[in-house]
Amino acid sequence: MKNTAITFKDAKKTGQKLSMLTAYDYSTAKLMDQSGIHGILVGDSLGMVMLGYEDTLAVTMEDMLHHTKAVARGAKNCLIVADMPFMSYHTSIEQAVFNAGRLIKEGGAQAVKLEGGATFCKEIKAITRSSIPVMAHLGLTPQSIHAFGGFKVQGKSQEAAQALLDDAKAVEAAGAFALVLECVPEKLAQKISETLSIPTIGIGAGAGCDGQILVYQDMIGMYSDFTPKFVKQYTNVGIQMKQAFASYIQEIQSGAFPQKEHTFCIDDSIIDKLY
Ligand code: KIV
Image 1 (cartoon, protein in one colour):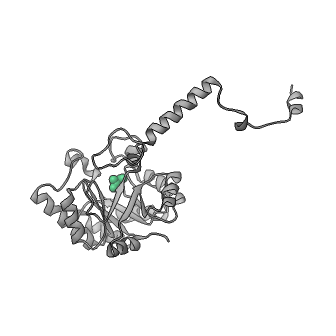
Image 2: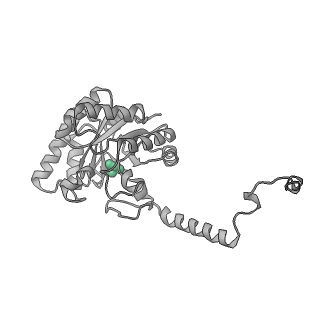
């Protein structure tokens, strides 16, 4: 059965934990979908893990559309959420609705995600009014990296914790169907999860959230530039890939590859007649 924003909200009611991963391409999305993942986020983290930027700020709408289309071709059962990149919803409500619409119409996503709390409620309302489900994102919101002064845990002081809870209530009231909580102390994330009727999806926010999300390269050991504390590595394909690449190089040198079974045949008589 196809997962939707509604099945996400229903999961909160029944207490079923939600699983999400990021994906950015057809083959990976297809594997995740076949594994039974509830949702895929085409995150603007693609700027870092796919394109090699230091942060997510340079990611464009065209980048997001390109990768969302690939994911949509691969994943048929899970909910596909596309990130709204930096400056695609910041300058006007019209621009926010227009760009959210592009991710659905052209990209093939079924929902969009945007970073920010009360300040962006007008945009959340306008997008949901256009029948586009919105996933909100609070805590460490990477598009605000310069304002935060680095990748830091958020909501640790009394004031910051209250502001986070207030923002969470505000995005729910504005119509968000789910909320990503990134790098938030576990007890605060639990309090927010208990307070809201929409599901919280945690990343570095502990087990009290209604679901979890990880960047897939982090959890399979494929991105070695930086591994956050909250990542659990389920395998290390980085090591396996390097071993495979090295064997390939070595076998080309030694002549062990390619062999007969990797090649195509032609009648000798044809070759003989060539001049
Ligand atoms: O861009 C992204 O991958 C995200 C997740 C870390 C939640 O926003």
